[in-house]
Length: 113
Ligand code: AMP
Ligand code: ZN
Image 1 (cartoon, rainbow, N blue to C red):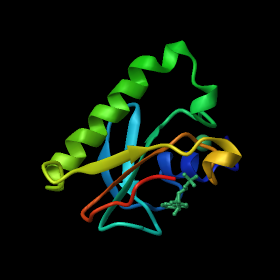
Image 2: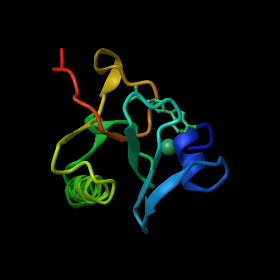
Image 3: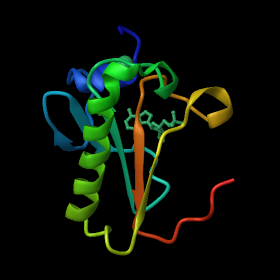
Image 4: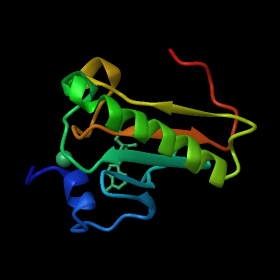
């Protein structure tokens, strides 16, 4: 997707502080962190949101979550705890329409609401 900022990051056209990458997944520091650890995980392939992920994306989504858990352990936040979430569409607060998961931790997070 030519105008998608996360596609550009995945293609290396826009710089990002990458913490993990493989054939299918990229993880990088959020540019406006809201917690001491705030990492975004994206599938390299453009998918606008979780709402548009089909059954065929199941294994990929599972790998994204497992990558988040691995990064949390590497960052040393796993035992105290962390949060993995995706904002979907307008009411979910989604601003970048390339599916991504936030990995948040390093401080006590407030309840969702
Ligand atoms: P949302 O779509 O609301 O789930 O969140 C989009 C997230 O992307 C926000 O937390 C932004 O700070 C983050 N973001 C936007 N542009 C960049 C960028 N170029 N590099 C890293 N993070 C970004
Ligand atoms: Zn994209």
